[in-house]
Image (tube, rainbow over all chains, first blue to last red; front, side, top):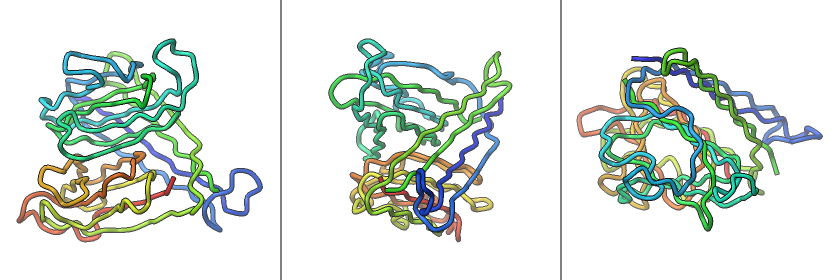
Length: 142
Length: 130
């Protein structure tokens, strides 16, 4: 068993700020943290193409055969997988490997997500048009 | 249009042989509606079912959820209807998530199979419309 500590902060200026105004008359500052127990298997922070194939099909990062809950981190690196340097805003859609459950995340350039994925769902990524580079990691819940 | 800045930090000293310290941040431009919804829900134990916490009417959105119930598990299900097997996220007490949602399907919340009970005031949700 190991320990993973995620911390999320959400901040926004007040809507009267002269630079990067926020939504409301008061500034927003939210911070949450947790202490998660994890176990093997896991995948450390990795850089990969949205079209990568680990043997379960193109873009399948976690197969549906994985029955454990996984803490997932994924980020759109905003560059094409073809050369790793050309900037792109191609959206990346994230859904289930089983593809029958309807969840749909949509990562724009530079956007990221962190969430606990239910077991037996799997995770599949699909880029609109050309494949893009992603940063990805997951840890099995202990 | 408003700006929201999310920052995620992941740290660990023992998930691998080397310590982990990752920090990512973004500057998100929100939609013309400048809409933020902050809500507390009480998911019930109907699966499929439970309260709808996100509607497709909002389109693409950035969603923060946290299970603030003392003991019950909370599941999120995504579907245009409350379809069976739509559950995809499992939040244990204290766990949270942040993700950009496509806005193509609704999201419901429940506590699992019948008999698990109602997580009264157990799910915190913030939605920022992209």
